[in-house]
Image 1 (cartoon, helix red, strand yellow):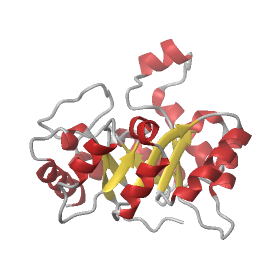
Image 2 (image 1 turned 90 degrees about the horizontal axis):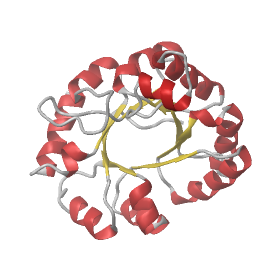
Image 3 (image 1 turned 90 degrees about the vertical axis):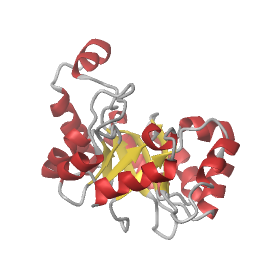
Image 4 (image 1 turned 30 degrees about the vertical axis):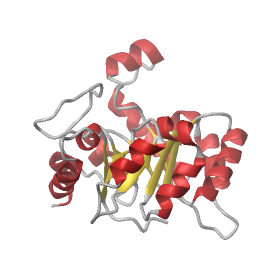
Length: 235
């Protein structure tokens, strides 16, 4: 199902259409792979997805669905019509939910976007996981269990920390995709994420795709920052 090569995704964490289009207009030579998250999607709806797709960008639609299996199945059937390249859900929703999502996402001709599962958010530390979620197992063990359940459900990969990418491949296979936020330049701000690394280190650790937001979108020269990120990650 995966015909995509390793790449850098830009997180389009903007509040509205004008901001995002002004940003994309900066890229006159490249068509970066982009991630559309909750903020932009909830502000502008499916029309923004179609417009960005029409511009020639590959899209990861990052809505992190998590509900009962039938509801997620029906929602994914709707999202499959947007012609995105990748979408996601929470692995915590169980294998049944992930299987329902896969069924809903698959079109009558058998094609579908890639489907990946969120293991634990990169803002979640082991301490927060234990205190807030009452999950007593070590964070690494939880992430690998969620990844293995996603694989059992037939998904294409997971969202995880770049620090966990290599072990996910060890547990689930090299073809099982790792999409990793939590990437910052060595000289940049960490922000509110706690499990982070650099583009070059993410490559060494086995990330297939890195998701980079503020280090690119808030840079003085976003195009130069994007190119730096691509060079460091892809070599």
